[in-house]
Figure 1 (cartoon, rainbow, N blue to C red):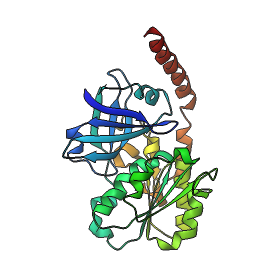
Figure 2: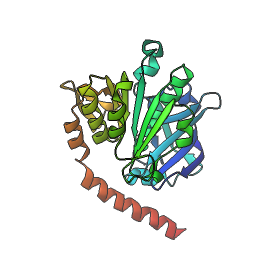
Figure 3: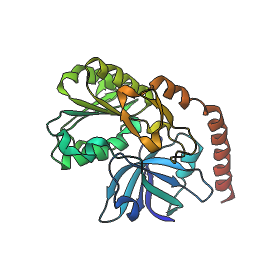
Figure 4: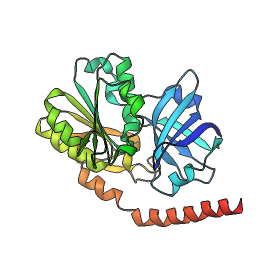
Length: 283
């Protein structure tokens, strides 16, 4: 069991959890993730390491309620059953920042994708980089951790679908207007967003890193749900990634894989809601 300092709602469907996990944060790097289990019989949930404090042994996580397992996670209060990690591979720029000195880097984040973007930008700032961020969501209320991100970036531009904050439109609109300012792009967010970013950067031959963490389910390589095609070869996001060369990703296949279990997940979510509601009534 791991001590939960807090588990609070930060938007209409997103939560931030702070956990005491000293062994996890001792050697973690930006880009890696952990597997959490709310209870002993809960499903495994892969969550990006969003922030950490090595000295205090603290781990910050952000998650979005998208199904039964994440709905159950919202009920966690003082203890969480399991936090395993760090898993996956660190972001390649953060692993070897000296190799990227002088490069003009732009991070493009969509929705909760800002969670894995933040630790990378923060790490690079600490190593002397001036990094720009383009961050988009459906509306202003879904833009997360703005205050924290703004402290570690050189420049940040916002886009919202409804125009309630920043530019009305998509992150690709902003990127297209500033594309010549960058040597490298890192895109993290919904698969369709990353696909659109890559289609743009390919035209200008700008190397682009993407994170295939939206495909992950079990996080161990056993379930096969995160299998994706990279440069014509099968890879697992949780083992070989989660980050890959965007030019080599078969995004159409990834989008198809994401829709495979939608019906089953909806059924499970309904059962979970009844279970949680039953517990409240019992109390």
